[in-house]
Amino acid sequence: MGGVSGLEDEALDAVAVLGEKLRRSLYTLVRDARRPVTRDEAADAAGISRKLAAFHLDKLVDAGLLRSRFESGRRVVGRKPKVYEPVENAIQVSIPPRNYKLLADILVEALLAANADVDARDATMRVSHERGVSLGTTERERRRPGRLGPERALTLTEEILDQHGFEPVRPARDCLRLGNCPFHPIAAREPEFVCGLNLAFVNGLTEGLQVERTLDAVLSPAAGECCVELRHRTSATAREPG
Image 1 (tube, rainbow, N blue to C red):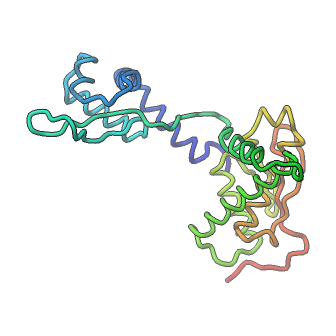
Image 2: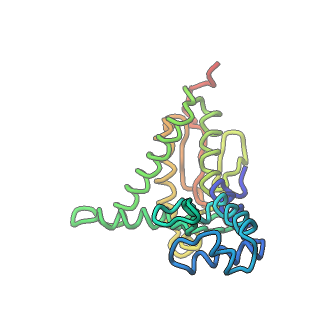
Image 3: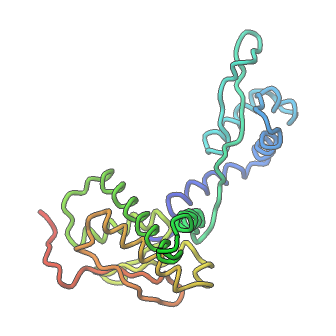
């Protein structure tokens, strides 16, 4: 596995849509307007036909860069005009994948949870673990994988981590290494802190997937890779079902 994650793939598709010069100018026009823009307004501003403007505007909607609706307060020749406006979510592309939003969310929640009895570092590890548990629980409920032996547990964990930018690799059948840290270069500045956060997240993920008795997640730093490694538990006696 490894490579571009699912979220990065969607972002790349959106950016590719902007590769067409006229489409990019229409996108900029709608963003700069700071109000809903009709097809006629976009066509007039770009000096093109209404039909061509509609084609490119709808392509931008399909890519998730704009949203459209029929405006109730205005009518053109007896019908409501279709208007376009930018979406709030930012489109970000990073190769290899980076996920600073997740890191920021964890740090903000940890900061709010920290108090006289719990310092910020301990709160961060707890919040990171909880995020992993939440992700694992959601994925287990969605996929309904049933009972998981060591091999299937490692494969499922690999798929999920790949989708979230960790670029997992399998140096051995019973081993999974995280090839990329989505929080780099922050990890390069504070490796002990970020590696601990990653480990807490992965441990939470295995708990949410209900495979924590099958897989061990440990810190195993290596140059150019993430610090976390997962292996079949050496004491596990579970076999693949069926």
